[in-house]
Length: 78
Image (tube, rainbow, N blue to C red; front, side, top):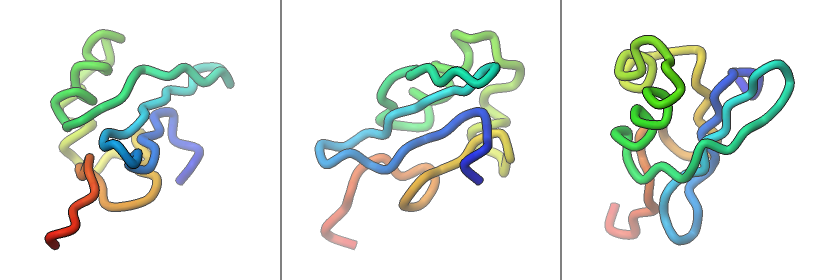
């Protein structure tokens, strides 16, 4: 689902995931999220209604690219 307006990219080698929002065909990087709390804060700052529900629920508005949703660092011990 790469057409969702909010894209959470793959985990970076140093940890964290780049978050991009697409509005009217223009991509804007919101920042690097290291947790769901960071992602919620990015959306809250944009006045997105119900950011907690979007992030923690099963929303089609957010596409998680590569890896599992809600995971922000690679783990070697799993």
